[in-house]
Length: 116
Image (tube, rainbow, N blue to C red; front, side):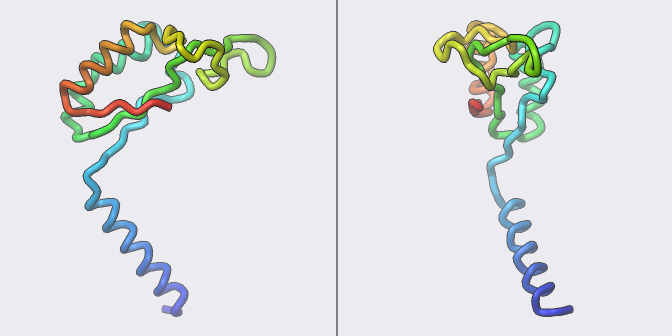
């Protein structure tokens, strides 16, 4: 094995051991089509908090929560990445009430919510 390959292998093993020993496990709690979930994405996640917690996730990364542009043309839906009203938490993913219920449930199970 060349010295360059040995060094890469050594660094890879160090990084791997750091990841394994880390106590933080983050779940990306959305995908590109989550905004279109029929019952609202926050409600869907809220029904699955026990599964998320039981899988030992410590943090869940939530989609953008603000009301965002929902227009036409090339970008018919911004998925929350073109916010219109930063303080209006009624978005395509659910309303403020469903978001607050989700956060409360997550915290009760020891899972920290993280905003996008």
